Length: 300
Image 1 (tube, rainbow, N blue to C red):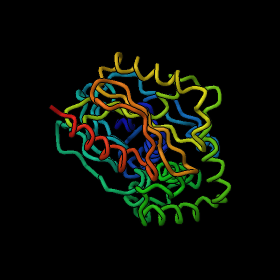
Image 2 (spheres, helix red, strand yellow):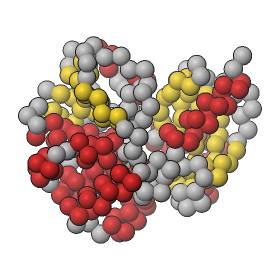
Image 3 (cartoon, rainbow, N blue to C red):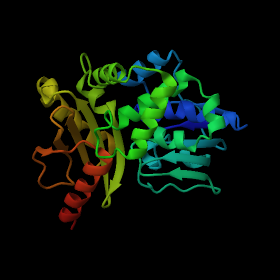
Image 4 (cartoon, helix red, strand yellow):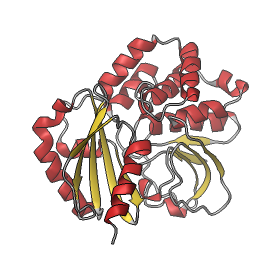
């Protein structure tokens, strides 16, 4: 059996695309099962509820000697501890290559589109697509709209627009209503602790020789987190110690004003004063290159 999963601290693209990728592989005659590497966030839970489908189970077992298919990541630090003991047979991703080493040549599909779901949809032949139910297509639709922030992120391509059009036609969802409810769920932080917020969407990267933990919170207004800023800063300082990261970055993204407020903790940056950057919405396409420049400037 092929174990299909995405990164730790999973987002909607990771979980929804893993689910449908396992279905796609099974359609092609390869026995596959999707898993998740963490609890669902509220947006992902909304998508599965809307699709009336059961989310994949948590991955708890060792991957030693098992065939795996990765979705939405190639950074080893973003996967389970036993990933390097597995046999990676396939990858579907839309991020940079992250230093992964495989035992045998895998089937690799990586493309600069707005979501892994868009790429998976493109990989499906017309025959495969006929095997996908409208409910399963809702998962792909939700994943694309989530990762592209309703097609507003700078990572969005014409191929994402085309995928959304085709998936909307298949699912018969009311597009604007679905987007409204999805973004409401995405930006809902009521009742979450500072530590839960920091874990909501965080990924580990190696940037200019520095171990960097970058967490992103997408909000409808930066005012949502004002009461928790001091707690978030304390949680970031603690994460520097517990994760061994040289830098922890919190990216608070205001999807209404289309800007991000950045907070920093850790010794890797000499100037770690908070800053607001207009137009920054994407961690992948905007924050990571920005951090690379800053860290390169401060390197000894």
